[in-house]
Image (tube, rainbow, N blue to C red; front, side, top):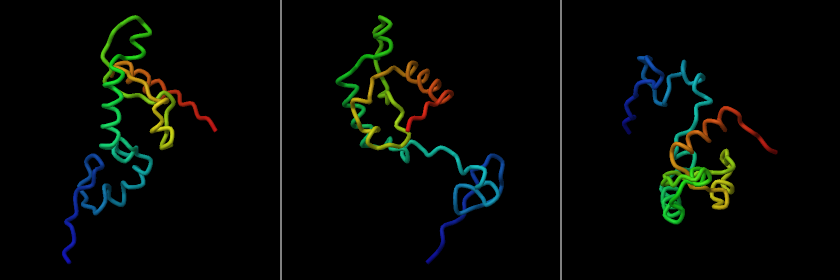
Length: 117
């Protein structure tokens, strides 16, 4: 059976060919890379659920608290799920936000993570 052709290493500027994402020299540099959205659970099931949630909750919660009416475009996890599927799918942990509010909240959480046990 024929083998798949090798593809270029995804490390910026690397000319080597590999069977994986990265060549053997760069693989160890990318061990801690973040998984893509689909691998983190944001798949077609999530897209359907979040669309349904936004239809039921059309306004940004943070903007509403400031007295502004802004359309919500993102379903945010109030408490970051960090891979916990139970917390990921708990609708009590969801809130509707506009992209601006969501990006601000996520940036703050990523800069100053709070871990609970």
